[in-house]
Length: 106
Image (tube, rainbow, N blue to C red; front, side):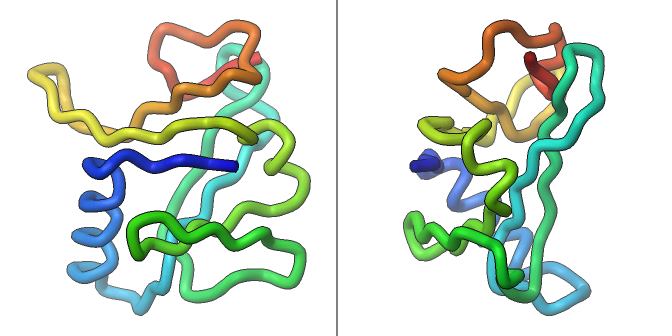
């Protein structure tokens, strides 16, 4: 299961409502790369793909492909506003380590 904080839900809803392209949810993936081995990828998506798991949190649909699901199970996604910049953060219990930017893990 993937969790989104209220702040993350609000950020996604804002992005969907102000986006140039129609979107019905947020796609989250894990790909090989980054400085720690795997990296998080996310973006707005119009619809689910056939192999996606669809999770709804706070009125936001989250699309996760089957290959990424095992890496993301139990992850909490937050949206943080800070002096250094705003963005999504991932609290992933499956990560053995992560890089300093928080965007990749192993």
